[in-house]
Length: 282
Image 1 (cartoon, rainbow, N blue to C red):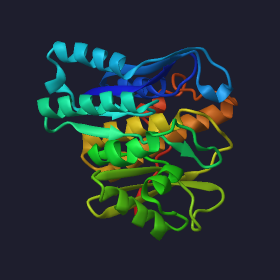
Image 2 (image 1 turned 45 degrees about the vertical axis):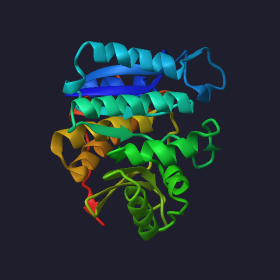
Image 3 (image 1 turned 135 degrees about the vertical axis):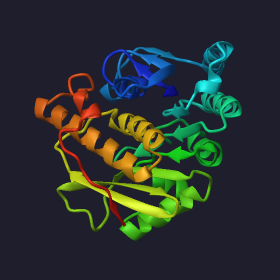
Image 4 (image 1 turned 90 degrees about the horizontal axis):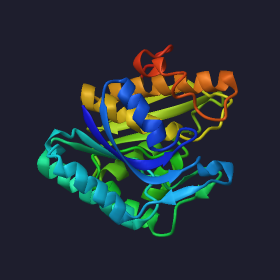
């Protein structure tokens, strides 16, 4: 399995490609990582050093990959935080080139916009770019609850509302939606839900809520869901596998009291989750 992953990179910690790449490699995938930034650490620390690459620099790297003649072997393109619209344009151009070389390849877009509590934290123009260009071109999208509501102009306070919003997002183009975090009026206070939608069906996965707040878990979830969806052909199976692995990763991180997710120390969770959860049709 070959995955072209176009995301941010940090030297210290695990977000963007630094969160997505190793789990995919641990599962046996080849990852062609194209970095959109090179930072010392993620911005949640309040200070960092490094460089934001331009859309042209991203496009140049993809040109070099294409020159190797390998695009027909790409199974998927994965994108996350885009930084600015020029980088987004370079990503969508890469998607078009991969799909032209391999029509069976999938595009998985993690439509990073913001989150509950923080609100929008991307640059002006990115929400519109995501809604009008990136999401409609995607085969799989992996929003959190805040992003789902923002992209659809709806609220997902109930399970029925969430399903309606996911269906509305599918109507814009994506065949598969993974809702990476969900809390409705039916979610117990000690739990967190995830939900997947595909082919007119919906599945809910509920795991215990952990006493932890870290960056990069969403990047890992998107990568793992893409891998398992490619391997199994089933959104339900991908939801179970990705959700179980990420719960194990976060449990290990919470037990250690770590500030960064323990991507390396907890790597066995990607291959053989210590606790498996079942997705329920809903």
